[in-house]
Image (cartoon, rainbow, N blue to C red):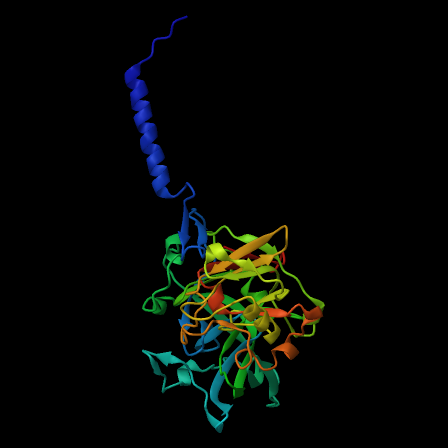
Length: 414
């Protein structure tokens, strides 16, 4: 049987098909891969039409040396360091005093409350925590707690907490750029987190004086912050040099590679359960094509958004020096592979990326006498001469997406 084609109909069908395909692609139904950042430091991202979890903007604060987030706590809005190295919500209250000691002596002053237009705020009342309820212990007793380089005296409150979000539609294009500080006042819609245990700080002693939003889990017991903040037990950040984004869930724009977290016995004495990944290798060299693997390096990496630089033992500093590591504009590059033999993620840092933003002649790796923490080896014991721990700070997290999956006990990196 012979079939005669209507060629005009065929051509019309083909033209309509091409138009429909073009419209579908422009609508974003087809995944489109993009890369952000310098060569070797790319963030893989997939443009898909999916719903976003609640999203809050972050900004980099030079004074704090950390990423900041705003929260509605009690009656007002407060600014806090996003800290994956602690598990508390700790906020300075009105009348807070700060004692800071240096080699020149000690001074006691009112607790600062942040900066505005490049100047330290003079009027702090509205930026301090204003409780909307009564303290849990009404005896007036103060509890002393240590957070990194600061020791706080606190009272406990159970209070309402909300996360500011934007009413604008979030897209992958939005999260692939730093939030504009001028847009942050627009983030006044709220997502209720719930009633959370708040540490109201009345006195601080130490080098830092930060409000803290702790995003890690305590060693034992319930964590009001994470249990209320994360119904799906997942939170994520994408971090850039001047800011970033926090998601109360998984961002739909990225394709991370996942590494299972570990709990080394030597780190089980802390009240906080840190986010810890194994280190597969560390390599250094003058450029990306001339890297050589160090024969010895830390076994464990603690991911800590509340620490600015990256700290290690002096033993590891000696291993870096013996391997030819150099600092500054003509310094070395570094490759860190997190994970195991069968599953690891490669992070590459150019010599520019390793330069301290404030002191370019120095590296953000702090592993030498007078540079690392004086008591680093006591805080993080060195198991079997493996050079212990790499305390992985916020600067080395920049230009990457980090996903903290508490349910599956893993971290995704892209």
